[in-house]
Image (cartoon, rainbow, N blue to C red; front, side, top):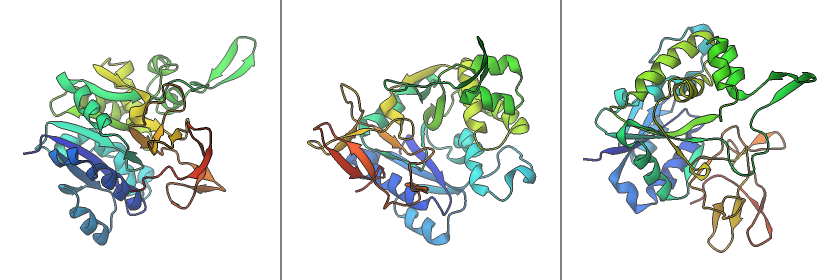
Length: 303
């Protein structure tokens, strides 16, 4: 019986990315001991048939917290903003859960092991979006002198979600946490904190980003036990491009000691000529190499 599970979600438009994520996982021999489960937010019958040959379970995502139709507007994929906070309900037979967004892929199995280790003792395993090379962590609009309007991602979403200025201020300059990759054990009390905060953020703000804000509240306001993992465990390419090591044929961090990228995450997309690499695999960009060259490469998984 497999005790650990990797979970992701997609609709029909993001199926190619989801399929690539799964292929990036199952190429490792170690993956045979880990289950892969998928939440369906609008996959076609044919797509589910393809996935069923590769994964352990596929279940339809639900609105686990009631959201008015006026907010949904037919965008069923937004269930990802709710259902991931209820993974033990969907797949109850596992002990440890590792969520990976479908626009990410696994480059180093050691990162998978780190996430499963990080959630021991009920802790949340997650990565902050801050590290060497990040030149801006929060935006402000300077009004006059020392006066400024805070525009950090946490503060902006917190104010929009009407969670109150006291809580919003606590989040204002806290390093933002990306919820696209995280790990939790089944019996962790962090699920309850996250779900409670999610009810509040969904009530006051937009659906998109609500679960991320709720998790930031759990970490920085509720002070849930958290194991912060290195940036290469959830490398968000839109924040900082990686480099490529031609000798080992792999993506690495752009600064010394050039650690290998563990999970490559295309959150927010990589755009070229107004086209998103997530939706067009033909798009390539210039990537510097450790050997001093520049290569035209895609950041999507290529088996």
